[in-house]
Image 1 (spheres, rainbow, N blue to C red):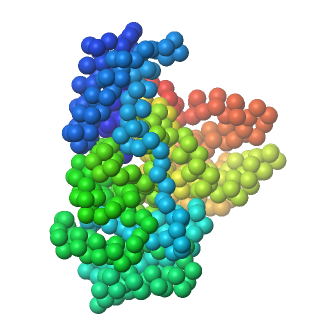
Image 2 (image 1 turned 90 degrees about the vertical axis):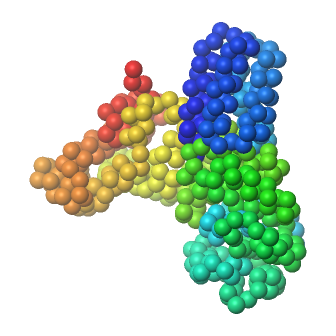
Image 3 (image 1 turned 180 degrees about the vertical axis):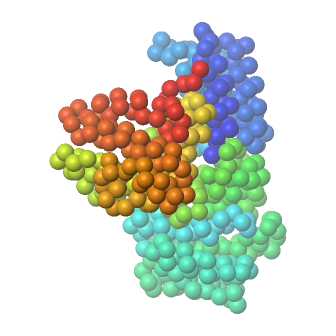
Length: 460
């Protein structure tokens, strides 16, 4: 998400950074480029105008201190304005009510509401330690109820059954009664969507809201619809007392216009970002972190939090102990590291959160993709246990067999073995005193898979 906007803004801000001082001329030039970047990202016109006017006004009145150069001062202003239009801080769910706290999900058909119900149930269960019940009041879409039942089993939520023969309000009332009897902390209610906003849909969701009196009413909107997402959210906000918005399918949207428009147009906070199809793909929305990512500053805090949740600490401790006893980092360990990286969303997700990664040469960025790492995993899986533990055994005939078994070329196997050797040297340095400094020096010579270039080195 935000790829194209980030690229355009980063280029503009680099140009401003080269100026000796902030002047009305170079600020006007920069804001013209920023305006075009925002419009291309499908940000609502009214939001673009407010944003550019505020940045320009602040920049012209900026007294640049000795601690900042003009470019840094301008970037700080743009960052602050991005945060302001998206919300000053993460707006958490309000669950401070007598259990069960009811969360009503609303949105158009195809926005991903049912998947979001499961994602939210998993998040509340794992991070907030809540007992969560879910129910589907969508009696129109074929298999909607069955879909939620399957997803609820996957995330460990209590599924309250319903049928297409029931009325949505009757389903909601019965679900509330059952959730209460089962001592659920939270009840999440999935609702029917339509292909477009219509009076019948609005009347139904208003009736559900009246019957449930939810503490949270969340509007789920497909981020890929761009500016239309904000306009649709506004229509729902006019019909319902929304408490927040969830942007779904954000991994499929390179523009990010919805995230920059929806709060200003609806007056409602963005509470979560839905990422991918997996049930762990839901993240709280932090405006300051998102603003940093848009400006190419990365989002290290989110990366650390993700590592805390998703990295297998048992495996990490076993590897650390193995390194401390002087044993070698083998291909089974390498395979574990690839799996850990995949659990965190893959290399592309991790790079997106690291500062300055947008400045990598295009060739290096293209090579640092998840397909390369998946291929490496397949190659390792095609080896025998003995080969994985003792890579030095792998001669030419073994390479031919491994390449054939993994559907790759001998060159791919050689590249993997070279990567492993480099990683092995780095891990050896980490296990010694002062290991982190040695590892960082070692990374300077570590090549991206297939790129032929060390990360961070610009091609001139």
